[in-house]
Image 1 (cartoon, rainbow, N blue to C red):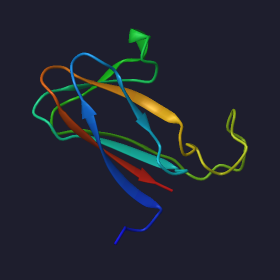
Image 2: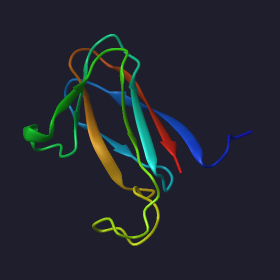
Image 3: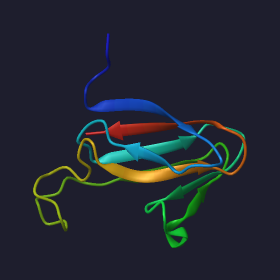
Image 4: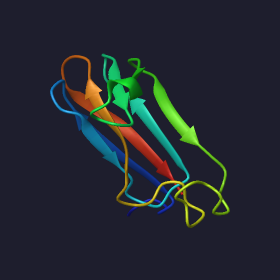
Length: 106
């Protein structure tokens, strides 16, 4: 049986070669990305722009949790910050491979 549709977890396969897109499976307000591997993960909001890069250290997590919008956020026509099917960020492993664990909350 599936869990509540407002709370979804997905494993995201990452490697050292490509920038892997993290795509929202549901309309959501909050996103967490847990680095469950023993090496650092690189994260970017634009795969082609190194100026958007940050690091999620091994065993740590990145989170974006925000209140509901009333349509006042740029490009936002409704209460969800992130829409299903939208790419939220890109991940790449510093070395080796492994999954990151993404959590999405409506």
